[in-house]
Length: 73
Figure 1 (cartoon, rainbow, N blue to C red):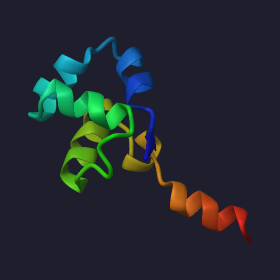
Figure 2 (figure 1 turned 30 degrees about the vertical axis):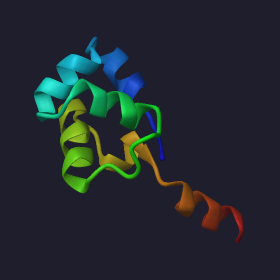
Figure 3 (figure 1 turned 60 degrees about the horizontal axis):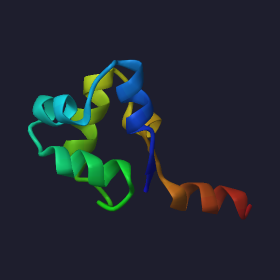
Figure 4 (figure 1 turned 90 degrees about the vertical axis):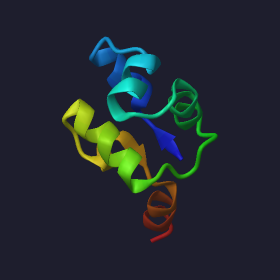
C-alpha cells in the first residue's frame, strides 16, 4: 500500500523513531509501513499516524484497489 508517511514526517521534522514513540510501535514497524512491506497496517495504527499529523487516513494512505476500480470505469 502506497503512503505519504515520509512526506508528512519531513513536513513535521519528525524521525521514524519519534513517530514510532508517539504511536507506540517500533521504528522498524514505521520503516516497514513506509516501504510498503507491512500491508495493510491495522486501522488503529493508520488512525494514530493520521491523527499525529492532523490529517485523514486517506491523506496518508493510497488505497490502490480504489484507484484501479475508478480507472476502469
